[in-house]
Length: 103
Image (tube, rainbow, N blue to C red; front, side):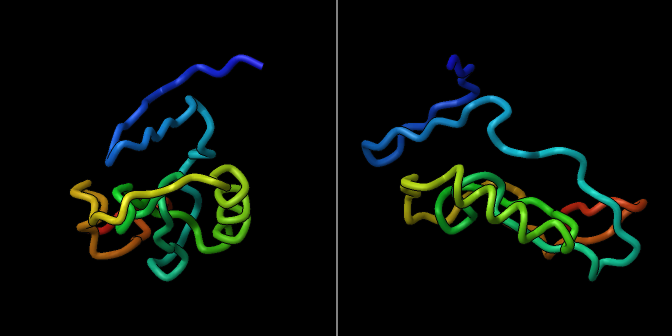
């Protein structure tokens, strides 16, 4: 199987690679009110592991987390707070019917 690599990050002597299309990004998802949305790590490492976060419909969280855990098994994340702007988000909000990061 051939994988196209999207990014490789070297941090603390460890290499982290993200395969193009590996993360099930998809559409942000339908919502009606802010409480329909939650924040989740965007790919393997969340904000406290040098990664980032994104908003997702609450109803999709369990499936997303199950997929993320399977995809990221064995992945080591750095113990550093990310400087990504998504990590400064006040929370997940519903905007025009889609879950997005709040400001």
